Length: 388
Ligand SMILES: [Zn+2]
Image (cartoon, rainbow, N blue to C red; front, side, top):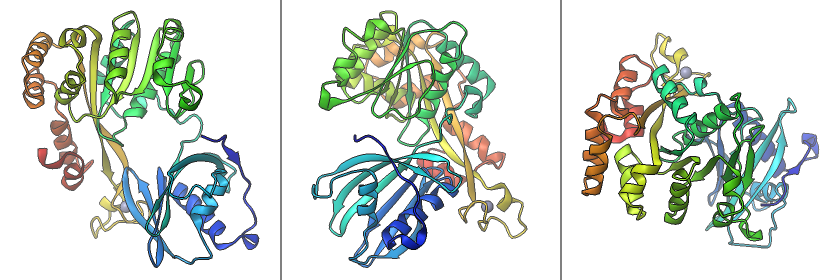
């Protein structure tokens, strides 16, 4: 990834259409608290989408004129070469809004039949890492999560689909650990580093110069850290290395794409990790989703939820997590769960076993949020499907 390029805003009168459009979209998206912007070329027009509270909306369209190309402007901001036609590219640049607040923009570009399409990820401002008590989880879950963070070994996996807040949870755990009085040596291995936390070592993978995951987790780096954060578990090899670190005096944190506690355990088995090793190393699993909150201003309006200025007509504003934490050290039926896993039980039956001990399921929590008018059935259906 090229070094982020800093740019200053030029007076509008001197800018071409593409520059104006890019400036306008970036400011507008930030003002709507969007996390991503997608620029999609069509035959006649450009479609601009914003992702707000996890959902993509068509924000505006611009005529697609051959003389104007906002994606070319974005690529030049990120110093990406324009001659590599057809090859997907990634880069980043710094962008300052009117209040001279600086944002890092991560750009990815790939070609479509109507030309290059761009996706921009707006990175949070510095200091955007939340504390555990700002996540919106209940007191009991927070206390149990802190207990896991205070452990000296074991592996905590945070499970959920993309955009379910896994990284936010993991960063909040790291921040809690970094702020503890008794300092521990923390090493994160990330690609890319999402937010910077003072007083811990964050390592950005650079596969081109040989710093791949295997090298970073290898014999040089691993012994130096008490706490390892390997952001995402995709490959069996990574899972195996992190699991073995968690069994040899490291506390490890990772995220995984899985829908439930049971399916996380099944994924680990699918990655050929032996059940006895999972049982020894795995300390806990967090399974989470984010639900959009009903916009309070619309709710209070006599005409019902029509959508208002505050929520940009969507009827929702902000998000609330639903969050299930299983700490296998505390779980009464822990042994049964692992015996069933060994015997090939399905994810669903493992989830049912965990429910028996009275841990509120994601569905239970969602139903409660519908009853208290924090969210609505349509939103729960969007996120959980027909499980409620
Ligand atoms: Zn509203």
